[in-house]
Image 1: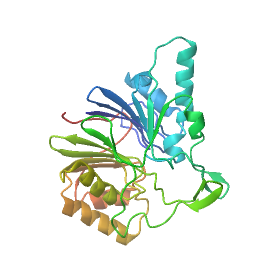
Image 2 (image 1 turned 180 degrees about the vertical axis):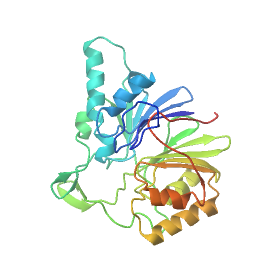
Image 3 (image 1 turned 45 degrees about the vertical axis):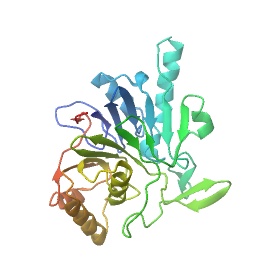
Image 4 (image 1 turned 90 degrees about the vertical axis):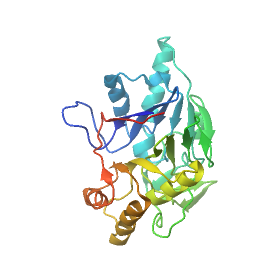
Length: 279
């Protein structure tokens, strides 16, 4: 498997890409190409072009959850497909894989923090596959679906509200999910923001994949100025779980990275980074 970082808050030095507070990865695994999240704007399209990656050949678009910094790039992605159609440029119609709640209206007061596009609008451009259960994209790459929340210190507070059937509900981000790749050396877990809790995600990945070896965890860990107890227990979990390496980024602050570095080898992340794992 090969993972290209198209969008992150940071860019790698001497690599002239564009960063923004969001996430987008381009993944190649077992003959399939997967766009994981689309960031906030068209930055991922511009960076992919400079990297020589053809988004028109994507087999899947996967959303980690519905927040703006992961889903608003769907608008320029559709524009890319539409322009290809006008210019008679061949392109695939990818499957859009997400949790059923990912595309609901999400807000904090009057502020819109969810997808700009509804399920019906997206269905005109993608093959929709909304699932709360795990789906194996390839023999080794799995979409986890809804994450089981097994501990008592993560995902305890809502972020805004979502609308469903005309009613507003506190949003505990049940749509938050991740991808997992089963390498020969252990699991590679790919997250967006880890609203479900990074420790919960790792535990559920072990359960779904029937493998307790964690080779790497890349993505946002939802550790922005976390409470001391949450950070302490997260660090302890990483130490006790013998996670080999972590690439914490996006919504993980410096204090949390430094604390985690005492428990696991930390890798730098920025736009332009390419990570490869054996198949």
